[in-house]
Image (tube, rainbow, N blue to C red; front, side, top):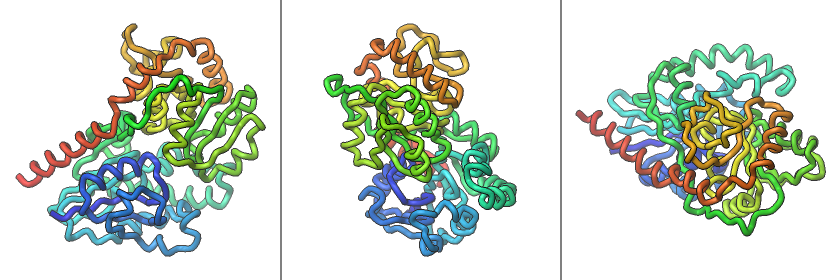
Length: 385
């Protein structure tokens, strides 16, 4: 059986690439198709595959400006010739799900999210003030066509897997398709609670993409003056560094061990974006650290808030024996985040590192690998019949 794995782009090891890595380990002989590949930017498990790229690979400044080629991506993804493949596994947050499979093949898509840039988070990426007049004008013209193409090509997928209930609802809304939920993998076993290493700083680990709202955290800690460590890089790096006060330290992207050490030392992990799932939230919890996060999106499925920041629409069961793993805030403002941080300080002693780690363990990478392998095998069996 010939297998093709399709991923949007290979430019770094973020949440989507960690999901892809498991697929690459499950199917080591599969061919890998991607719009562009920066060699050495992803794990050896991914790099070891036969990687096929599109014409976008050869365009100017592609390593740093590939997002500017978004209008060309629908054309690029459709150029891949997949006629010889029996099984297509796409890992998609942009256009990967829209490859053209041959008649009779089986296409399973692990959908991290429908393309957020053109649907519900368009303004966060292409608002006139944030992106500038020319990108705003161009994308306002192209947006209806991109939405139509994205929805139309959703029928090229036989089975959708969503990474959360939040994404499952968005797949239904934009593609009118059902989806099975399989939560993404978190390497919880490489994290161990360590109260002895705890220090006085708060932490965020994030790409500096607009929807992550790292700017809210910077604003809040500017006002509070508390030590705040920022791990990550991205398109808003210069803006964030200009905003930050002397109490805020930027570390750039770090290796896994260094990130683990930062998790171990922080008082709490902070996150301000509406995540589709949020692997970093679980990595922090796997280290036994509480989180302070926006109470929307995937966080509702991965964080148990303390009762004073719980509200019925968070869908957390009313059970007094449940141990909290974090604190929620509900408005994307620095003022609401500051209130959540101050509330966290008042209840900080209630968080049990071992209980938080136990909660995170249910999302371990081994569970993800087992579930997705079983799903693919069951669908293949049904498809053959």
